[in-house]
Length: 112
Image (cartoon, rainbow, N blue to C red; front, side):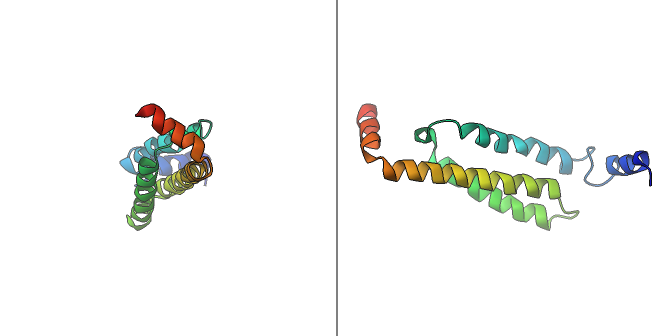
């Protein structure tokens, strides 16, 4: 099978670039790249509530991507990566929050 026939088959497939099965996951990679970019920032700026919500969101959509027909491997891979990034962010926040109480008290006093 030549490259052009395989490429044409991909273009016209149920998960090809003419469908939301392709462009939805492509857009979701923005969450992953934003999370990776945030790893350079201080853990004090991490919202544990939002990061936890992103973990739940990715876990739910991993299951959806696996169960939908045809299986959406692009979306599944995207949410696996996002789950990993968000768990790393949550662990960074927890390590910072529970190991630096003086800094946290000073920040809380400053905002009051």
